[in-house]
Length: 246
Image (cartoon, rainbow, N blue to C red; front, side, top):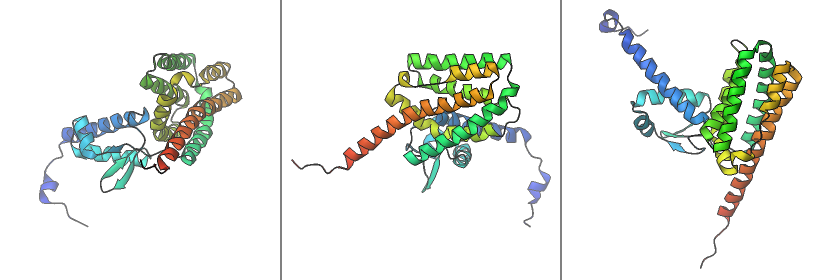
């Protein structure tokens, strides 16, 4: 075993400095995580440690730590040669993410229902109003933040839910694509079933809540996702055609 140096053995640890490092690392991670969740960074967009450090006004160390954590959550891809990017969405990956979200979120909602009270329902109504307002004024941050807050608040009603961290990892993977799809199709063409979910919550009806959550995901995400997939496929096919020489 490697021995500690005499300096390391006798010098006290600067607790304040250690706390400061952790605080900076957590802030950087939280800011990057929010940017990815809300789709402020597009799928396939290349990132650099230097660029992120300059944007957030920090050194490279907390950026590297944040990227390591985000890579573990599959929110970013570390490609080698210090290349980093937001993962590109494929039809197969989209289908997998949707299936995983439906499986986890319907179960999380069902398990959380027994812990819901009137105060939580009021929060759900507030977040749903944020979604509607985001659609009305075409504010994508507001739309996405309100939507994720609605679902997170419901699922988190169950104390120490093991589902929430798993679900949030899926959100991180789909967030950039979801925003891209919203911008393409327009938020006024989206579908959400939050009203049905709220009715089920008020009635304490687990089966109705499961149906509403699944419908919210299938009718909303599937519609806008498939529209963008078709657009991307058509654009790729057009680009692959040989150009005629003049």
